[in-house]
Amino acid sequence: MNVFRELITIDKHQDVPVYLQISNAIIHNIRRGTLRRGMKLPGSRELAGLLSIHRKTMLAAYDELMAQGWIEMIPRKGTFVVRDLPDIKPKKIKAGEDVGQYPTKTLFAIDEKSIVHFPQGNFPDPNILCINDGFPDIRLAPTELFLREFRSLARLRAYKKYYQYGSAKGPTYLRETLAPYLSDTRGLPITPANVLVTKGAQMGIYLTARLLIKPGDNVVVGEPSYFAATRTFQHVGAQILRVPVDENGMDVEALERLCKKKRIRLIYVIPHHHHPTTVTLPPDRRIRLLELAAHYKFAIIEDDYDYDFHYASNPILPMASLDHHGNVIYIGTLSKTLAPSIRVGFMVAPENFINAAAHLRRAMDWQGDSMMEVAIAELYRNGVMGRHIKKVVKIYHERRDHFCQLMKDSLGEKVTFKIPDGGMSIWTTFNSGKLTQIAEKAAKKGLVFADGTLYNTHKTDYNASRMGFASLQLKEQEKAIAILSEVLS
Ligand SMILES: Cc1ncc(COP(=O)(O)O)c(C=O)c1O
Image 1 (cartoon, helix red, strand yellow):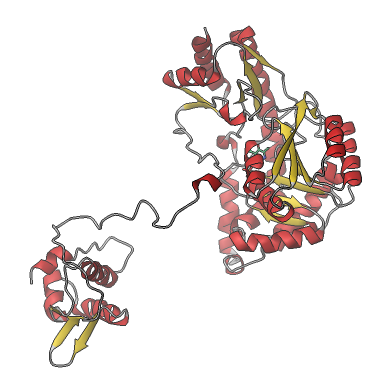
Image 2: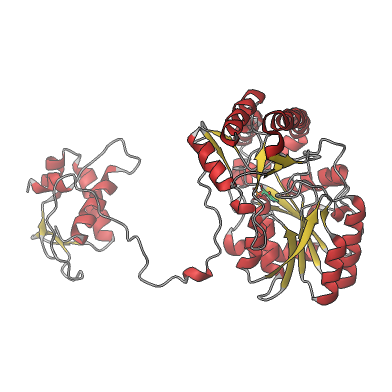
């Protein structure tokens, strides 16, 4: 019977209780055929002795196995593996052998052609020097103050409320915080009924796409535009039409010409610091867009992901703050304001749309993380968020200027860029050499940055990249540009 010592390993430091470790090990060995159907098992006292555990623990393990139907107790005869288990071929195992492999492929087919591919987030080690796509410097995030809010929620026993299932629209407390905040700071004439708390901007884009687009519907995006939004629209079957983006954002006259020819269901606009080009849509184009939306009855997604970070002046008021006949779905996020991994964003829309989106959200994600969302509401209410934004805008402004100066001085004619009014990156065109090769060479010298392929469309290879300056301190910027300069020369 010593074989049981080999078949069952117990680790008292594991979180799994010992009796479950034993019953799981026995099930595993029945499954692989090492313990055969009808086989007599040692008595609980004997097995407890062999495994050096208390007999009560062994009885609990046997009870568990009986409850699950793996073993049976026959009075005056003993404990047996049940007879009517499916046929399993015995297999020899060695001590310490691992539990085998999960299948690497499904037996059923997956239509590979129907997958719309999204980047899977293979970001480099955070210690490697990286010019990213335009992310915030997470070292500046008010982490301690954020954690303090979490801790105090637990102290107040609020967790009893916020650990429960809650609304698909997000906690009332956060929606009652965001509605007046967005009214005061962005001129949105809204109440909490107009707000749905999302997991970042991406969820708002997806919910809107799913609700509005039927396969074959025409959706207009910029040439170029934010790849993740375009892919989301394609994912739900949209026909993508592109309108040029110039130094003032989407060309609304070209859009009007298109509207005259085709029926448009939705247009996707990034009004501040357009992705990827970083240009800002001026007020006259915003107003014209709204007129076109009212006339041609299309919906607008206004993705204002970067609203807080405008350096040239105050940000321009969103289209959603103007008269829009209910045509605008306004989307915001804290990915840039706090950190990309804090998956909190918001969607602002007429109430009927918010209700429909809340129902749809349930199908994929029952609700957000209430504790986190309430902690964030506190950051808005106690002024931490306001102070944080003010602080980082100043820092990023300085970093933008420093980075642009470095590129001008060290890279000269080899690149072309325009200083953006805000945001966290510089749209930089490389004038000599293929960007894919330049990025590869830079990586070998210790600098990682996007090789530009994500920003290309089927029409155009821009040979350009978004050079994220915000997350790099001035010295880090100098190091990064020095490497780039070396690669380009
Ligand atoms: C145009 C645009 N929208 C939205 C986002 C952010 O999305 P999320 O809030 O899901 O992180 C980004 C991120 O870079 C973006 O560039």
